[in-house]
Image (cartoon, rainbow over all chains, first blue to last red; front, side, top):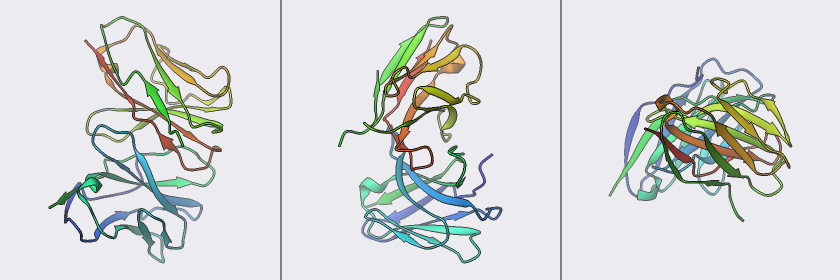
Length: 110
Length: 113
């Protein structure tokens, strides 16, 4: 079973920051938080991952709370092409398996 | 560079037939994974290869499903005696090493009539 909880859907206006929450209250110390997204009819796309510290790359920022029980993926300037299902996944550092939940369907509106 | 590719993109077959789905991973990636995704759900793990060997096939639903990776690069997922319940999108992913981030192909949509 997935170890994360995400809202089923969210809307965001184009050009604004999209903030996608994820709860992982049972996360263990050696487990990473991964984010993937899946645009309609495409394969999942890796976005970012982190362990304790906040992370940023060219696609997004990942903010992990100090207790690591939740995180937020931030798309700083959402575009229509960011409309997708976003998956938050917790994965132990010693296990390759990604256990997927239902994700958050993010709709970017013009 | 080239990403993970999968062929065919769509496959329609009849119940009871045999199908093969192909995956070309990113060059140099040693780990390869197969997943299955039903409508409205996240991907479900099927099998993982490290090099040529299947290191974990615990996700294969039954013995009708089999996968190979004979030269440690291209992989083929084989399904015998297909059933309507096998209809899904079959996704392949690869990673440089086993615990690195996985990069996915576009998937093969299998429809069993």
